[in-house]
Length: 214
Image (tube, rainbow, N blue to C red):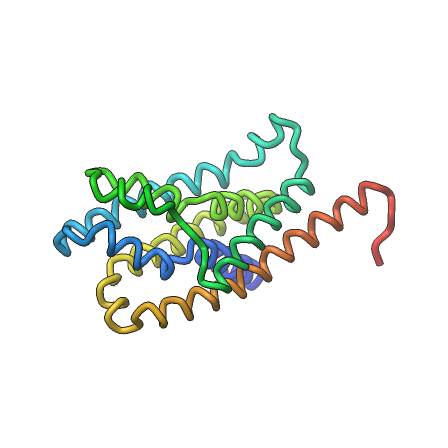
């Protein structure tokens, strides 16, 4: 039982951390906070981390209920979510994943609440991350599973916060090339996760059609 929960935690943690990919956020974060002191940067990253974590937890617990309200089945969402994550993963493989538009990034430099937009949403809790937590939660059938998913989201977002807090150091140590390399590695993992979601969805559709799967 414990080993199963530990395995689930590892899977959930990796899935959430990979799709959030804070290393890809580091350059944008440093750009929109270039006039901030280190203390202010830490404050902004903390607020953004809290807001994005709450958003992901809310969707993890209510996401499928919302989709059911609109008549969206789990297999359909698995396939659609898998395709979305695949596109994001492919973009990360090419280090071309655009988190925000150029005009949005410029606008954010004039805002006092950048921890809400664009940091919390869409940089951290974007469509990919929201889809991921909803898909992960859709497979859970016990309170222990939800507890493990909750802890995994909290730990993944804590790691994200720590990454943003160390953003200036990471930029100096890794430079843009190193950050792009990590993003590409994240892209490989995200693509694999996306394909698994698609396979799960297609498998359920096949079963619904009455075909047996060996």
